[in-house]
Length: 80
Image 1 (tube, rainbow, N blue to C red):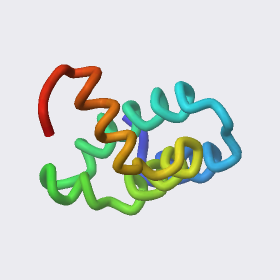
Image 2 (cartoon, rainbow, N blue to C red):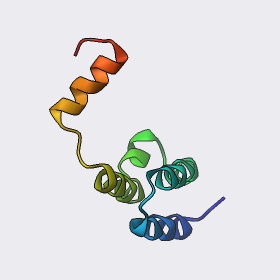
Image 3 (spheres, rainbow, N blue to C red):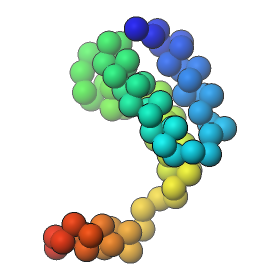
């Protein structure tokens, strides 16, 4: 089990990443580990480490635009 300091260091280290897959894999590990340090889903979802990871992922992909939502609905064959 990692301590919060190690999780925070990893969250900072991925800020230089350019590979979404690597960031996502690290994020999944961080979420699992944060479960051991938080008192529930809401606390984990809003933890600073989670926000830093998500900020990086948005930085790599850009924010979803309406056309993206439409494309995903089309791919899923469901109406919005």
